[in-house]
Image (cartoon, rainbow, N blue to C red; front, side):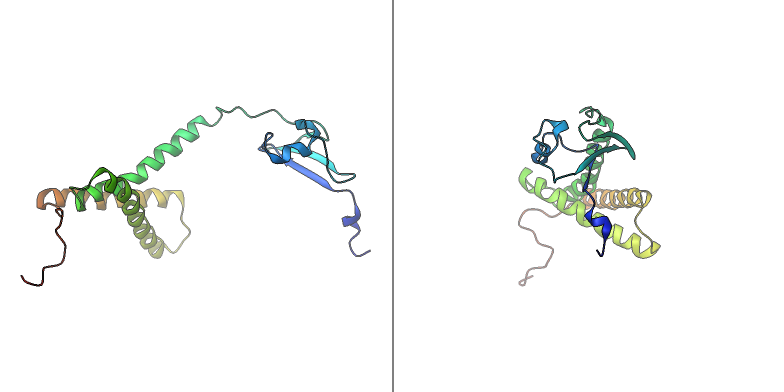
Length: 169
């Protein structure tokens, strides 16, 4: 035989984060399923790099509220990412309707963040770190804040106004 280890019985490794109510749960007897695994398969449950159960036992169900702080931090971060876009919309389109504002905030915010991040990566020549991502957010917010302040003094574009002079002027 070319690979004798392939003829051994299969080993099924189930991570702690396994969705015990998902479509594959019916394969494992420990989750109330029928256990229709390949013949001779051994099931090992792992959590945090440690074996927590074998063939018929599972680890502890995760607490649904675990990581609530992480979820709140993620939501706060997502809202922070909208700040540059909101400032730019107010600067460039001060008379924008709610629908226009809701559509343009993420577009302008993402566009500005992308430009700042690409420039930052071109300058540093290294992979993006979380610190650099924060710097990109701060720089994007400063740029959009300056645009907002300048537009506040000089006014943005009014409805029907374009940035191009008319042909008859």
